[in-house]
Amino acid sequence: MENEDSEALKKLWPVLCALICVAGGMIFSSRVWGRTNLSLLSILINVGLAGLGAVIGLITFKLGKKAKIAALVFCLLILGTSLGLSKYMTSDAYIVKQDWPVHELDTLTFAYPTTLKEKNLKGVEPENADAKVLTNENMNRYVACYIYDFKRDKPSLEACVESAVTTILTRYGAKTLIWDTDTTTISPSVVKGRFTFTNKLRNKTYTHTGFAYGHAEGAHYEIIMFYPLRKQYSEAFMNKIEESIELKTER
Image 1 (spheres, rainbow, N blue to C red):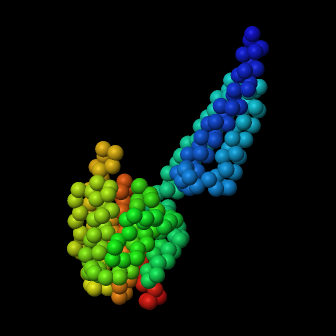
Image 2 (image 1 turned 90 degrees about the horizontal axis):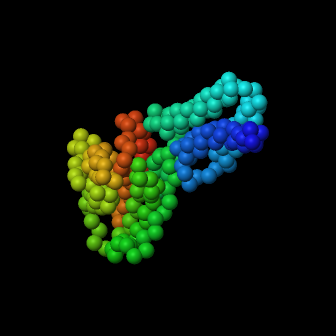
């Protein structure tokens, strides 16, 4: 009976070590690259950590209690290091120092560390314009780009930006919206500024500052908006967003 228990433990110990190590890898991959972005690098990291944990378990099982404790501590250190490293690599302090991908619209370009996808507007297209919407669909920090080509009843750019910002905030439960007069610029062709809003998501209230930029060229309007729905932008992050926006005609 003791031999059977010993054999069972021998099989489980490498599995336990592998699970602890691979847990760190999975958390790291999820935080840094996202749960849905299964890259070759994340697979290699997780397979490598699982293999490392299993080897440690196989080697230390026969070396006694002290060796097992040392192995467990080592595996937990791998887990802790993965947690700490992933937290740093997803912090604004780290992200702001990186090169961001540049996104190009028809008249505007801007840099932001995300991918943007076109949103299906079937059934909700405006009647007076051809429209295109790009978003990152991130509920921590939401980015939206609205592109309009008005066919009639063209609104002012200021009204269009105000409506676009308010529409999205209302969708996510915003209760207040205050534009920062110190950062707001309004003209017939350019509207930009920071805004503060309060929203409630999953019974938790957030007060954050976002940014919007709108450009009009005839009947062609482009509006880009940045909403920190759950996670506030740091000042350095916000400044980098604003400084990256350029008109193609001015480049």
